[in-house]
Length: 251
Image (tube, rainbow, N blue to C red):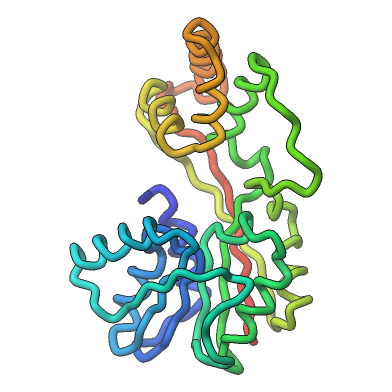
């Protein structure tokens, strides 16, 4: 998951963590950026949350490996955070908003548990054009396999990517001094084979779609993806662009 570090780094920069801060990391999955924040809030504490207990098991394993002790994990829903008002100095959320059914309610809950003057920062995926790492393979799959159209209002990884979208939600939730920063990086896989394997390990939509294809169709998709990547990235290193938006604000 190190390839997501640039977004975590920007969240941390925006939060301006102090050593005594108490920080809430929402939808943290396997623990980041919460565990990195814990090292900065060395005399404070980080509460790492997610809906999936299995994810938090991994976070706890990572914490043990890193020697991080100033943290706790809580299984909870962002729509009903089990914390008192004005509990935290900062709230972080890396790629959680794309999964929240009610994003405004989530933002309001984050505002509720923040102390006055507390800071919030969240990362979401940018627009499809900035994320060739996933559109190259999913676009090719869609040309070869008939996939059902997403239901109206269905969650999707690019739902928050339009400029100003999440910033507007933050403002509606009552945050002040809201700002937005675009992050553009490259996913460097080294070669097409490693890129294909990586996407079939980490990208659930890719795994689901490819599982519906027979061997011949899968091989056809694979070769078309290789050709597309080589056309777009001439150095044949499979270093594909990905982009995110980090939105921050203050209570």
